[in-house]
Image 1: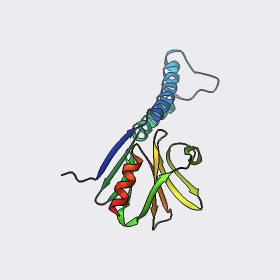
Image 2: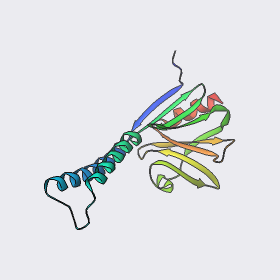
Image 3: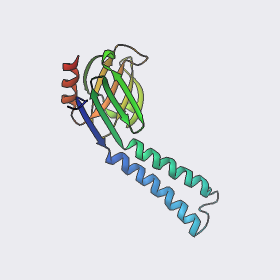
Image 4: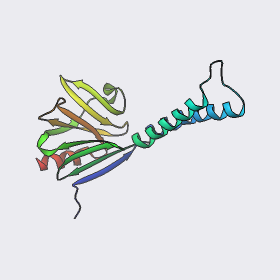
Length: 160
């Protein structure tokens, strides 16, 4: 028997594509400066370019996949090494998020206020979102993207 009620992993092609473009541009600049010479009148150092490539590569690996696990302890949502755990006793209810993703300022991990309540949001551009209403903490709503919002809502409501 598995130790989870629901498990999902969402790979965001859009997010990965953005990172590929940025890393490609940095890599092109680095290679150009090695083979041809400095790019522009005030070029970035090769060391700086290498550090930026590594930072964006780490971010791409971490933020291209959003995972959701619902288990007997609660709801776990995370981007790579950055995870957020909401225990069952903190969840008052849930509903489908009808707020536009533009309202959150994009995708990734976001913080915002909607109707006077602070929200922490873990979203991808391709997914619908579920809102967990919380009974404690400095934020009262936790929002996350999922491919199966109704199934997630049903599991959470049946658990409560």
